[in-house]
Length: 415
Image (cartoon, rainbow, N blue to C red):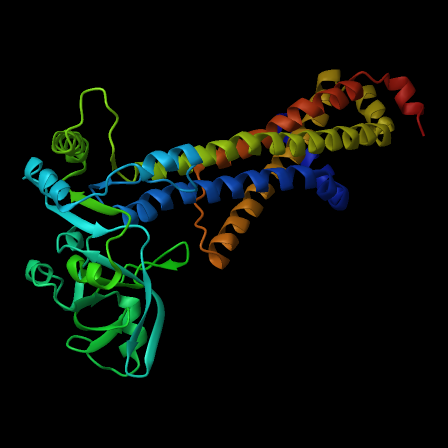
């Protein structure tokens, strides 16, 4: 029997029993769709964390010197006690890092945790919960800010403790957008005090649904006047190229150890970190998810395979007379076996294809209605299709062999 005839007969049997075939495939469709959709969301999040969240926190081609290490989640008690004993990052530390890295594009000081939030008030317009950062001018370079109006903060603003500010695009739009007023030169109240707007940054968009443009930048000296010194401050360093980051971190660490008179073998009382800490945390989380997903998918696939095997056994019983007639007119046992095995593989492969389509559509739906991104990967589609075909082979062998072993005389007599 030709392979084309085998496949054609298998598809004809599936088409003749559409409803039964659909319910047979349901377990495989759900399992494969779950695999494709979850992997798409996880892969999308991996790229999103690296490309957006990490750069939003630290900056591209940049690293930070911090009192507290970068970490998603809470510190345990022991770690928090160690962090509290660390000295604050100061202007002396900034000077030491700057002298150690003369080739850096920018070395900046910024206020750290806890970041104050304030209403920003202009006339009768109020925007609430704006993040208020105190910075040196180089911070604007580290974070790649561009200005659509006015200018950024300058060193003279810091030295003279000027009451000036730069608004993020969201704040400026909410205060002045509807009125069509140029924000530059306007006076707003931040932290209960007046400051003059000297610039507005270009919009950076949203990360996981949260705006990156809802902030106010103040000279770090004026920020301390309003809010006092923060428990932490951060030094941000931007290098020319990504390849320069690791050597720059090593030299900054060495310079700070010397400046703080740390003896050899003594642990650092500061952290030098890139956004890799955030990326690594997310990767560790996704590793846990990837260890759970296969077990759930396997359960669904096994259930689907058992259903296929039972349906194929029932099909063998229903078609006993047909099998006997085919054998009587010359069909070999292996022809019968190939036919039923082809039906099982066709069923499971069809389930795999439908599962991939369902998973792809569900991933697109998740990306459309939530801030979670989704990226369909070729390897997840390939694994899903191989799983579908593999289930057909694994669970279709027994029914196929049982059909092939039927005695033709007994089968023809079967009513």
